[in-house]
Image (cartoon, rainbow over all chains, first blue to last red; front, side, top):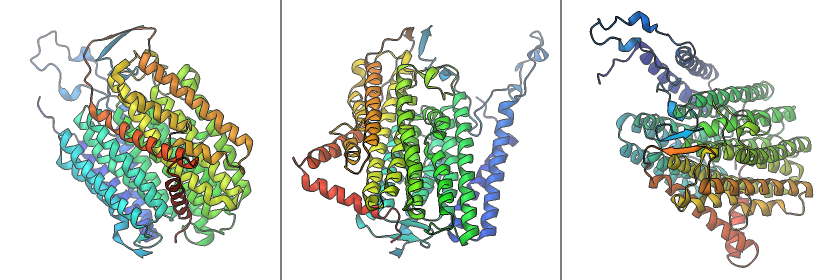
Length: 117
Length: 502
């Protein structure tokens, strides 16, 4: 399968993650050394980057961009691929950027067993 | 007491190990080998510190300080987290998940170890927040929608707890001009209660814990559930005992407040664990999933709500009986050891059952029968240890509560809770081994069995039983009497250093 390029959201997410880690370590070191203005700065860096990451991952999860499938159906006349990879929406787990595991929704693995209720 | 860089080497090794492993390795085997090596180095360094017994700090006494009690807590922490790393080899099926885990898990353990090894409230607070962020992200690795809900609850309640703690810190800084743990702060009673509630939310005591703990601990990946229940809440409880022991050591009002919270936690937690095992989440509530279940991991998450109550009860008793403070503080450490080992074991075995049957709901469980192997025994040993049965490590907790200076009503409550957990263990075991679901279950694929999901609980069970036998025989003067007294004296020696810098 063709490897997709990293989107701008992914890149900004990684940058925010790096800032968050720097912020956390800065907070830990400065709460030992205790230089108050610098400590506040690192607290700000951590909280802003965390807030940014949460927004970046929560907005697409809570309000997904839906596609009207009829608008991309050309009665089989269009050339392959009929649908662009970027236009297919698949919800992801916030922050960790991995797809949901729908198999375990009902607390048993649907790929391994069938339950007739 | 001396300044030494060794004080911070273990957390640094874990952090570096996590970063290096997640960047350099992509194959399962190499990730686990690399993480295990870094984790073992941390254990070796900490064991040396524990045996050596010297108090070391870096860069000053208000930074990271390792004394006897901290070294002991870190030893249990690193040991259980090492087993969790081994367990995760066969637990994570997706390499991407494991790479995330390999980065976040050592960082999480490092932040917890910083939290346990400081007398500086600001440092405790920052590591508390850092562990919350990292712990929350690891819970998401289950990739269930319910896990997202559980994480949100975990974050929300931790923020409420953190706000209370920061109010206390700001007030202390305003009155005495620093944030170091000290006795004799004006209005220390109010600050101590703020800290007790703030950390109580993180620990999971009644009533706050019920809103987030069963959801978060049961939705997390199993190696993380074992660490959340067996270590995280306990380190928060250890830190609380240190804070209260230093700030308000002889305050009977706070003592009574903690005893009431502790007793309510013990009873509600064990009762809800039993309700979950018999009737499921429809009646035990506090569930975040799409359907009601009898969650095997939820049972032990409710039991954690009960076990953390022991910590508050013991701290409260120590405040009311200042002459016996050392005795109750050593009981806190022994309970830390017992609950840490037993709860990690029960979660490891629950995860093994889930992976082997591909079912996390006891109402759908088709009995594993002989397939359960030695894990059937280890599961019972873990449950019995929490039920304070003689021959297990839990028997020591029982011995602590049958002393003359403990009120009869408290003894009765402890016994009722132990009986409830005993019954819950047997009932859940019966379903796991001989369960017959009311619905038709058909397997469409063969399930592979994995050794690495079995080994950690066996190691923990051996620890629980060997220490349990030493306590049973030694306390009754049958055998090992000398070793038993040495064991108890060693714990008293460690307990002395919970609230003392020197």
